[in-house]
Image (tube, rainbow, N blue to C red; front, side, top):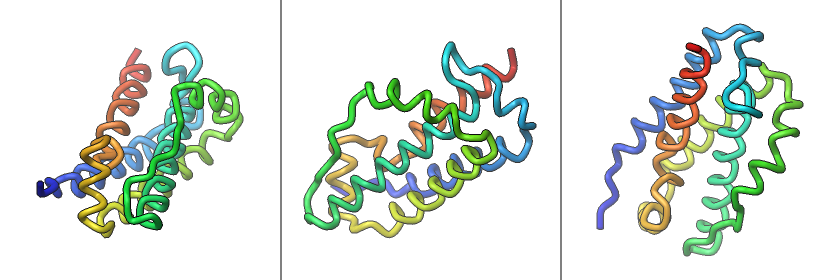
Length: 145
């Protein structure tokens, strides 16, 4: 099976969306609630965390030349939320952008056979836009309220 390489442009677009959102929002807007416990900056910190998780998966998979993924469940988000909330909003924004750029570049040049194996297991680990856009949509919706 040949992996659809359109993920490269989709990932770049979602990274640009993060950058554009951060550029247009004030520090107060970065503190705006998104749901009961999260803020826009927590969304950004979560995206950075998630991209770092994918980087860990890419590192382990490349090193072992087969799919290796970290056992992380939903509890990690719940445990991490207070820590993410403590990150100053602009710093969370910076980390989200830098991490998205780093994982985008890594995915673009990752060995295709391993990338296909990762994608077959969980497409969201390759098409980062799927996860990013989901949370960015939530943040945009919350900001419009």
